[in-house]
Image (cartoon, chains in turn purple, red):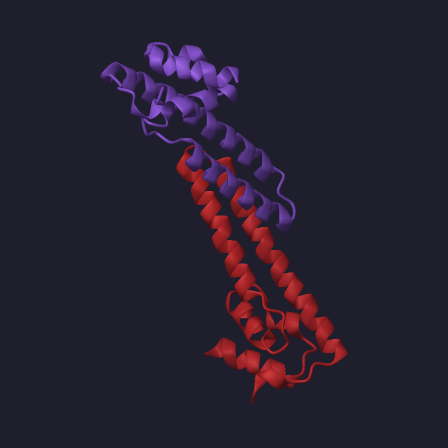
Length: 108
Length: 108
């Protein structure tokens, strides 16, 4: 099955958008909490540049991983479930073509 | 007078090093406090990347401005005094050749 050319109904698009935003919000919240924790402990110049590198790395990771093209979404969702950021429950309502791909990805 | 080719005695070098470190420590402390303040108020993803940009900008500014080559030091000290990070008092003991240049720079 070529997941790059699946059809997405309007309902599926809404479900996908919601799940995507949920994971993204959780990810941002995680970075915010980590940044607050690191900032509270800032003591040396090196800590500053370490905080800077942490933020740069997380921004690039998020940019790279959260790809909202429909051709990429099943793969993105599979990765997010593997990482524990989403559950299959969050994708309930997507067609079996997408869910089947996601299930296979997370069981690899 | 070409400030790039002044002679620095051992005592002058020690005074310069002390003043330079004093200004640099104050600068780092300022960035640390500002970063802590910004981090404490982090609420949105944009705040994260704004904190990242702030750190990158301050790191580059500090790298550029704190140039410890003796050929540059009188100019560096003049700038630091103009910015209120050092006072002429901190440079007491430097030769008149350096102080004269610094005084002229801060009176421009």
